[in-house]
Length: 193
Figure 1 (cartoon, rainbow, N blue to C red):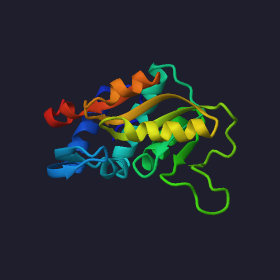
Figure 2 (cartoon, one colour):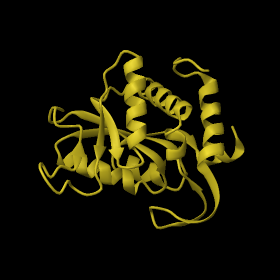
Figure 3 (cartoon, rainbow, N blue to C red):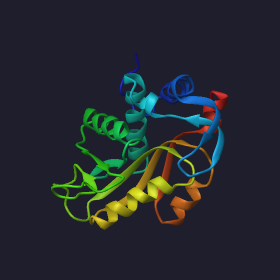
């Protein structure tokens, strides 16, 4: 079993193996972006596995440290980012940092506070946040989360995705003035390295 040593080279290789085994499927699919695809990545299958969650959290925290990101909290659009936010929050805590998780709803709560963002009621206005994404294609889902977080008074500094399909998300996100990081890419999953 791997330990929580940041940047361990075997961690990424093992994550690629788990993604290939649990999350990668070939067939005829329609993506969230509306694009058609001959393959599909269901990263939730990896993020909900204990080893997959450990690796995602550890690699994301290492990415944040290497990029000198010090977010107040991490999270993203439900449902894909939910297990990622918990994994990254726990990995940060294991490394001595308290980085809470948050969830951005797809629709506002229909009662009580009518909130779009869960878990953020104690965050200071202007708090720096990092958005997490399971798979990026065009960047649309990530930017929807950014929009709702900015409307709530927070500042998003970066987006970290588990898998970049290399379909234009980086260019769109960086064109919006945000930093963009991926733990791995689709070609890496397909090739195994």
